[in-house]
Image 1 (cartoon, rainbow, N blue to C red):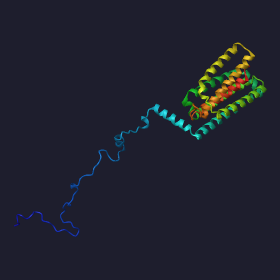
Image 2 (image 1 turned 120 degrees about the vertical axis):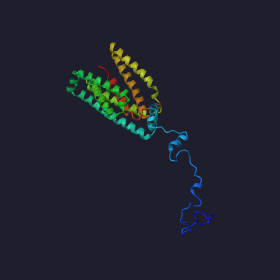
Image 3 (image 1 turned 30 degrees about the horizontal axis):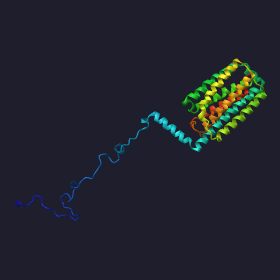
Length: 294
C-alpha cells in the first residue's frame, strides 16, 4: 500500500537530451512573456498610414475635369518653354506652310499662264462659289472646334481641303489679271512675307498685345472696301489694296510671334494646324490685296 504523501506523478529521470519521459512545460513558456507592441493599423496598409497622416490620394476619375484641363494647359506652357519643343513646333509649322504656299502659287501660275485653263475657270463661276462655301465651312470648323483641329489625321485632312479650295479661289481671281502683274505681285508678296517673318523672329518688341487693335482695324478696312464697291474710284481701289496689305502684314507679324512663343501670348504646342492656317491666310490675303480687284 502506497504512502498517502507520495505524489501521484513521480519525477522521471531525464534522458541524454535533458528532457524527461513525460512532457512538461519549459521553465519559461510563451504565456509568461509579454506580447510585442503593435499599432492599431496593419503595418503593410499604406492607406491607413496616409489617412493617419492627413494625406489622401485621388484617382484619375476623382480629379475635377476643369482642374485637369488647367493642369494640362500648365504642362503645355511649361513644355513650350523648352527650346527643343519650340524649335520642333516652328519647324513643323513652316514645313506645312511651305507646302501650302508652293501648291497655291503653282495653281496661280497654271491658271494665269494657260489660256485654256484661264478660260475654263472664268466661265465656270459655280465652281468658284462651291470652293468658297467649302473653304468657309472647313476653315470655320478648324478655327472653332478644338477637338477637330487637334485630332490626327482629320486636322490634316481639313487643312488640305482648305488649301485646295482657297488655291482654286486665288487662281480664279488671278486669271482675270495680266500675267506680268501676277508674277510681280507674287514676288512682292514673297519679299514682304520673308521680311516680316525675319523681323518677328529677332525683334524684342511685343506685338501680340495689339491683337484686339488689329481686329478693330480689320473691321474698318472691310467697311472701307464695302463703300468702295458703291463709289468706284481708281485711287480708292489703290488705297484699299495698300491698306489691306498693310493690315494683314501686321497680322502676319502678330501670328508669327504667337507661333514662336517668345512674347506675352503664345500658341499651344498642339496648335500647329492653327498656326499654319493663320500664317497661310495672312500671306494669301496680302497677295490678293496687292493684286487688286478687277
